[in-house]
Image (cartoon, rainbow, N blue to C red; front, side, top):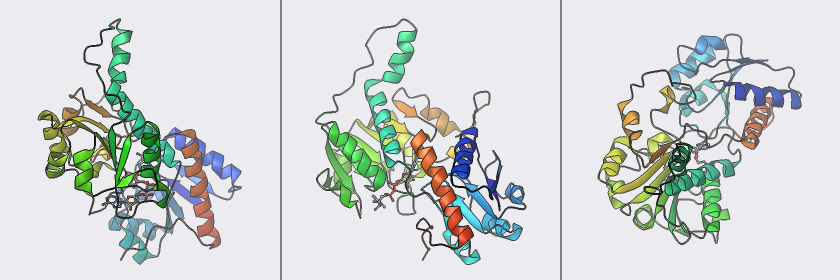
Length: 334
Ligand code: NAI
């Protein structure tokens, strides 16, 4: 069996090839393409029975239909989020669609902490200053996190790991989640979103992107936040209305922003654009704020998580090939 791996970077190839050999999947041949999956790149999957995709690949009805027409019968997501998949279309076509529901949730939670720590103590600016021989402290003032209140929106696997970390720092942790993880017991206090926004010095988003959560951080919710609070988003870009966030930064209602994800990230992230003219004015406006930190969707990017993603992807494929039950199927849409 041959699989087409889209949006493949050299590191994807390294870990997928390693897992392929470890899992004795010699019968599986992988064709790697750096291109993302779109309607235009569907033909690359010619002769493949499965495609392996990532967060910004396009899996709408037209793409799924075109893949099916080529003979593709399985879609293997090497990520947890599946907001880019038309579940109904996949179901209608009878495609096997599976994901990697958890790959070191701690990796993403630790990245959220790294973002908070960097923004709060301005280590990104201090690093550059010291290398220029500038040891002045002006502009580097932070706050002691011990005793502060951290609000976690979405207390699943990653949110719970984040709650554990911030609790360990001596913070009071609040969570807003319609169905929080039972592992959260004793770590945090469950409150409504409005109460969380009003009380938190740091708000960290860890819920999935769905219609109900799209732009959950908007002009109205930003106005409800504690003035000068910090906002972290390591979940999905569209949880945030970026234009509203820019206005809140300009008015200083929002004190600082760190994002690992961005609503229009598909045209930017995972590629080197250092010699290009970036046409996205919203993104470029964000880059002008000294209190904004952006990383390019690297929250998951640890050795452990990459190994887990590759191993689970091949385990999912084995279920498809052998017709055995798979615990990681995408949910059936209603
Ligand atoms: P999870 O499914 O374990 O937890 C999500 C939680 O959000 C659940 O407890 C759910 O009840 C809650 N939730 C649903 N709707 C909500 C709402 N309206 N308000 C508050 N909470 C709500 O998912 P997990 O593994 O913790 O991942 C969370 C998200 O992190 C993923 O959906 C994905 O978008 C993102 N992610 C980002 C990565 C990165 O590299 N930056 C890597 C992996 C995941």
